[in-house]
Image (cartoon, rainbow over all chains, first blue to last red; front, top):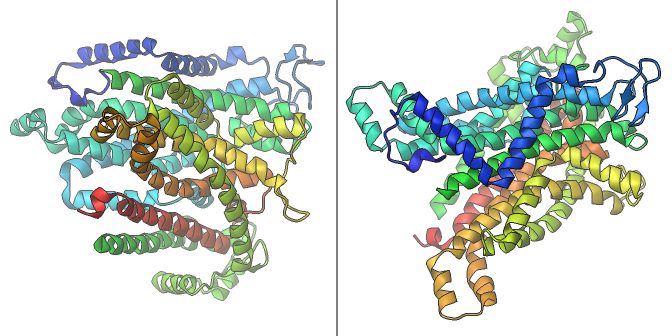
Length: 299
Length: 311
């Protein structure tokens, strides 16, 4: 059901039916344990992010008691540092909990921006063909020929490190890859009967692309989006780790590792827990993508 | 074949020129901020910046400057590094060599490992072994390099005390210090290469000629070794060549983490210290390596694949 590119049904069944089909394919995930584990991990972090103010035992940015090991009691304020504190005395558990908000806001936002640009470029290149395709494909080739982290470093070095700039950099670097996928799918779909029907009805090019072609390309795109979301989380983490990420003091998992890595030999808990957090979240998205792919291949 | 090679090399040169133009526009013009401020710092005054601009020829027309800049690059005149107070070439090439050593060790272990795992799981698609390898690959690919670096350090340096935690090679070259950086790179990347090999192997295994080989009663072993592998390993060749592009990103994180004096750490240092000349040179070299390997991958794939070679 997920790859509807192969089905012959008319895509005019209405949004209610489309929603129902979406839900059904999600229910199919139950059959793939890999997909279930992935969903559980992602859901866990989403819930942590939503309920961060209630889950975090301390204020993530206030200095309470430096160099506390995991499980140490907080002397002055009461309570326990379940995962210890960092060199400035901030509670690591609270920072991880609040950090999940940072990553779960920026990563989907950046992925969404990259997808918007990538889809528009891919549809135009695949549907129009000719010189539009040539120019867009060449641009994509050139951007993709950069080692990706070198590209990020150059962009961030020139426009500076901030939340918006990270989204811009990610959009710039990942939309060419999305464009290539969408272009390929569009090339396949544009010769279908329902596209010809829409053209005969006199629908505008953009309407054909967005209403007729795009919804039928969604199967492979959903799988790719899951994988890409995981990859964007890695990117945000790596940028934070290299000191090119979001400016302090707000908690950011990659940044937490960067700030405390000098002390990692003496206090491994400071770096270890944020690393486990980011790895499980990425693992969640990757397993989810694998489960979705498995199901889409099944029927 | 010849047309393809010429075309690919032509595109390679075109890409390099466009990239140089992008780098020039981003780092040397006022498009993204004054280069004089970038070099001298935001606390410099306008007078100092003007002197710097005059000295370094920044008051000439942009087009002329670009041509000169490109000419300098082409003749190997890479400029002076502000951070290291010396010619860029003197700093960059030893670093590039160090990274080449790290990359070589990484690939020497990763390629056989991922090819073996990929072939094993592709031989019988959907088997228990296949599922185990694939899930294991997903898990290792989900851990970012910096996170696995932290975890391996915690295990091998902090708990077991087997390996040194930094790889600065301050007391001369020591192979022991290469183990952790290489391990981090291998663990992050082998899953992807194995997955690609598996897909290629699985596709070959469903083909007609393999079925014929099995049906005519050849031993399973010789079906795999003599018939399947030759075709199944064409696609991974391209994938492996393209991993060099990825490696150039991976080494930045790993070299920064383990204080290894390589090319990746140098790019980061150049960017964090606004060392424009060094950053430009490093970026050009990185893109050059990436584009060259892509070209070799493309040409090599065509050459290895008889269906394309003879058509």
